[in-house]
Every structure is written in structure tokens, then in C-alpha cells.
Length: 447
Image (cartoon, rainbow, N blue to C red; front, side, top):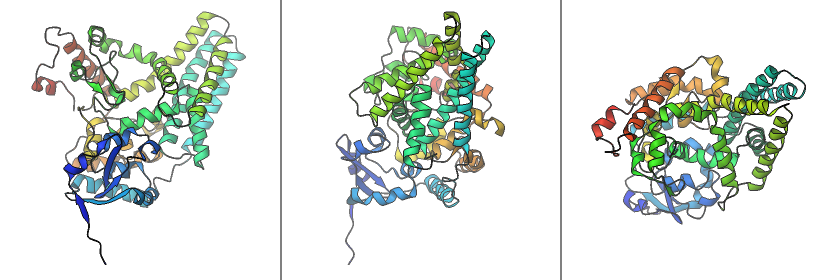
């Protein structure tokens, strides 16, 4: 005997979008994840941002097929009465299904093994250059190589955070801690906390932490209204000091990127020392202690303070290329204010991302993240597959009249600096700190 279905409307579902009362819909079935939110492997932030709506596309993007079996225990018994699937979402889900059937999510190649091997070899060369060579040029080369090591190690940490690059979950976690905490000094727990929020709320000015760089940078004049960051839970004050810094941000962008790692170290310490629930806090702290044991010790082995300062600044400057790349992927794309909408997942990713075009032999240098749109649409897809799916994604964007922006590294830098300059000139307008008007904003916003 069939049981009569019970329904809730989208408006009724929206009422369950507060901490302690989180309902979501997946494929039209409504689930209560209130008590489980804090246990969510991806953190509580994604559920808080998407609660009260249908999140099918986001669920498909982040979870393997085996995750569906765990949903039943959260089922409320209700179905979404006005459940609809857009044509874009239908095509997106079809693509995800085709990739899964082709085994593309499991075919990782030997990227992680090659990357870890190259990182180990670079680390040995750095040690040799510092400990066994007396030439200042050898020390300079070692510093540059250390910067490259940090870049490649960060890509391994990124990949292992999105999908399992090792043979088991335990080894995967070990790869994260070694490549992140031990080698770069940046906590993988901090990265997961911010990165998951970034993916879910891509380019939302008040929900995406990767755009919230007040008082140093502002990619939009909407920051001038001192908006509240829902990620950090505080107001992003646009005070006179912020106005001064932002007024010159198109000049200070690259110098700041050269020392951007300092901020990442600070953010790591702030999170690990906070009262916030941090997964594997002890392991993360141990990994950070490993970094702050070997790195200062290595620097201290250099013969003089001028060489030590040169070594640190050079290694930071080389790694700044990676920090710049992360900014290029999003700073000049479209932005919006408000929480993400589960019903326009594909559209929001195309709107908020920008690809960097390059030859295939440069994939190792960019870590696959030059295919930023493809990565955002299919975050579990191994980097060796991103170039293969790029033409398919491009065609789907063309079919639905959505942007697919792929620029050269040089062009992407130009777009980013132009975006920063636009906001800087607006910040200098002391008599009218608000955006001039919507038309002016539209003309000077790329995409």
C-alpha cells in the first residue's frame, strides 16, 4: 500500500535556515541536518549557507555516489512541492553522471606520486644548497627552489583535500598534513574551513572569504558600505585607513602578494588557537610545529643576516606567483551580495570564475587550477582530467549563453589590475564614497 506523500513549499523550507534548524532538499526530498551539521566532513559553513533550499547540484558536485545511501537517516518524510529542475541543471547532472560512469573521478593518474616525489627531491636540493654550498648564488637558487616546492606542495594539499589522492583515507590525511602543515606551515584545517566556504559561495562579497581582504584590497565598491562578513561573523569596516590603502591597491597588489604568506601563517595560528571546533586540531598543531622547527633552523644555517633575509624574501616572492594566480581566477569575475542559491549552481560558478589558458606542459606549474571553472563545477575531478573536460564545459556554457572566460596569464593580470584600479579610483572620491550609480558600476565591472 502506497503511503501518501507529505509536502512542503519552497517558502516553508526557507524557514529552516538557521543554526540549530537546518533543512535542505536533494532531488525534491527534504532532509533535516540540524544535529549533523557540526559533524559534516566539509564543515558547518556550507550547510549554513545553503540551508532552506534545494542543494542537489552542490551535493552532486561534492559527494561520490556512495554518499546517497547515508541520506535516508535525515529524511523528514516531506517532499518539496514546487521542486523544479532547470535545463542548465539537467545538463550539468547529465555531465556529472557521464563522468562518473566513465570512471573519471577515480582515474587520478600518477599526479600525486610525481608531485610528492618532485617535492622530496626539491627539498633535498634545498638542504644541499644551504648546508653544503658557500656561494650566495647557490643560496639564492635554493630560496627560489623552496618557493617552487611550496607551490607544488600546496597543490598536493589542495588535491588531497578535494578527493582522495592516496590509497586510503588515513594515508590521504597524512598527505594533507605533510604537504600542508609540515612543509608549507599552513594548516590544512584552516584551508578546508575557508576553501569549502569559497567554493559554495563563489564570489559572494559577504559569504566568500577569498574576496574579503579589507582593509588591504576591495574588488568592488560595495565593500565601501562596510558589509558584514557572514563567514567571519564581523563587520568589514571601510574606515579612513582602509580607504587610503584601497586607493592605491592597484599599485600595492604585487608587493603585498610577495609577503602574502605571512597572513596565511597568522590565519593558521588564529584558527588553531581559537575556541572554534577544529577537526584534528592536535595533528594540525603538531604539523605546524614541524614546519616552525625545520624552517627557522634551515634559515639559521645561512652565514649572515643579509643572506637570511634574502633567502626568506626570495622564497616568499617566488611563491607569490601562486597567490597571484588564485586572485586572477576570481578578482575580475562577477560578484554579488547575499548567500548562494542552490538552484543556480552552474550559473554562479561560470559567473564567478576565470580560466587561465596555457599549454599542456604548464599544467604542473598551475596545478590544474588554471581550469578554474571546470574545477569549481567538478571539485572532485582529479586535475589530470580537467583539460579533457574543458571543451565539454565550454560547449555547455555556449549552449546556455553563459560566460566561459579563458585568458592568457598576461590578460588575466590586466583584468585584475583594471578591476582593482576601478575600485581604487572610487575609494578616492571622498565626497561620494558610495558607488556612483548602477550603470557606472556595470560599465566598470568586467564580465
